[in-house]
Image 1 (tube, rainbow, N blue to C red):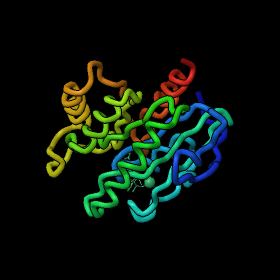
Image 2 (cartoon, helix red, strand yellow; image 1 turned 30 degrees about the horizontal axis):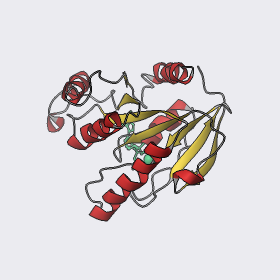
Image 3 (cartoon, rainbow, N blue to C red; image 1 turned 45 degrees about the vertical axis):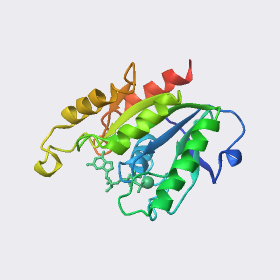
Image 4 (spheres, rainbow, N blue to C red; image 1 turned 45 degrees about the horizontal axis):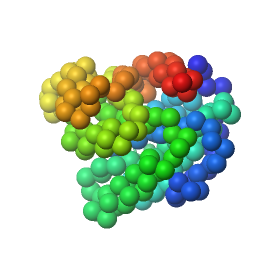
Length: 202
Ligand code: GTP
Ligand code: MG
């Protein structure tokens, strides 16, 4: 399951503008700064395929990347920037949630979660909302290369990952599949591509 080809197709401001060819797609979702663009670029082995982040919250766009001419990787705006005004956060909800609920060709959401810090409520809320709406989620933990730091609660990535799943048990009967990754060391890259390939062939 390797990526031989990747091309940017388009940016859409609403689900109705997204490509209509029905190819299976996987949406990359997560907090601003969690490492979405880095992961997309690491997956496709390109330094700058994913638009480098402009002002967070400014761009409200759904970006479609066609992979191997057979499926889409979709980059969505990040959520949860501490400094964003309330109306931007509300927009994120309206905009992204309508995409999730309408998009028939969406196979799964790759929900990115920073493994270098303890679980955040906003990520747990996002995972719960997706679960409640029967949208398949795969948890992709990022920054697993980062060493534990006092200021981050002094916990190892593995501990943060376990805590996150423990806290999700309240909203999921079965915890979603998860993969531990790093865009720095490429940890989890092949595993994630294999996971996507398996989900696609169901
Ligand atoms: P927005 O576009 O603002 O929503 O952010 P993003 O989720 O696209 O994050 P981005 O990929 O721009 O990465 C944010 C910061 O985290 C950058 O400084 C990256 O270098 C760093 N980063 C991303 N992935 C990793 C990782 O796996 N390990 C480490 N150590 N740093 C990472
Ligand atoms: Mg980005």
